[in-house]
Image (tube, rainbow, N blue to C red):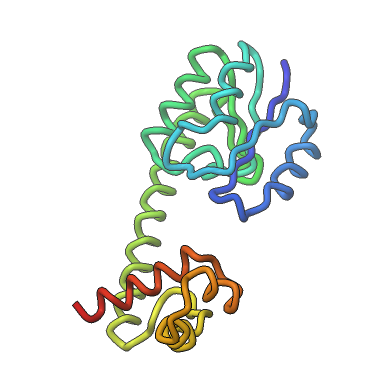
Length: 187
């Protein structure tokens, strides 16, 4: 029996450190931990695919939480069935469940369905909140940091995009983008 680990975060800005620490504390050698910085809504992840190639009958895969393996119920069940078909078990450390035995498989299926339903509810609540905020005049996105009036004045003074970019410490592409936006406003 060999221990493997799998850790995943949804974006490149998030950290895997906490998951990696838990997996190592549970006895997984760092060279047997596979990671992804990608959405859990698909199984097309390089770390997961490599893990699937490396494991063999009798191995155990440790994952910190159920939603780190995947968010979609069908994908989760498919992964667990793939691992089960070759005699590989999956243990979820924080949830204290395992796919070992029939009861474990049933619990994982139920929990993944609940996780999917909760994810949908969160998205619905988020969208409702966003719509309500927009109706109240809240603007989303980051604030503009470029002084558009200054840029337009420089253009009116017959400066070219390269000179405007130098003076304003921005890229030429940004200058062209703002000028095009301004053109489109008056069409």
